[in-house]
Length: 275
Image (tube, rainbow, N blue to C red):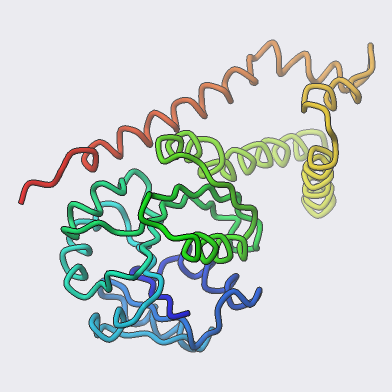
């Protein structure tokens, strides 16, 4: 199934790597281009054996899936450049935060089968939490192809398009929140006298273990937390500080604000494009 990536950054590479590793696509299926970075394309060609270049017509000809992996600010120019070469039967998959399916249809001047996706950077290790929204023109076969593609880089959930801003704030930006916690744990380890070489694997395994417990438990995170918080114990002493500092509310506010920012970034793509 010929799949063409317009944009060849880290998320595109994560998808390419995952799709090849998991058999969703072969290297010969994959074509990639970008705005101007030929060195980047050469590296992807050598690393994965995919087709790369700047011949847009050849890149898009008979392409079953076209992945829009450029930055949102480049959406208009990129769509102007490729719209004449898009096949009416192609499935457009967009990774661009805030860029609506309506905007893409307006720019291409036609009704298109479009899947909007919000993966996260954990796609690089096959652990992305990806939400996808599917418009009314997507066929069942195209839907299954999109699910196979994103399932090759992690967990995939189907949501309504209007929920994608919330997904962006929660899981799209989510890895950074966890890294922020890990940063704090690293600083704390240093403050209490643990060497980095000792602390880092303990922190990593603690995060992995907690995530696994969440995945197998039928209860809420709150129940798991209470289960390890003995009255008068060390965990209770630590949690008391987090509560005093309103850390939980800070995380809630963080995700709410990230969601609001996603909505603000999408405002230029909400209204019809004036031709």
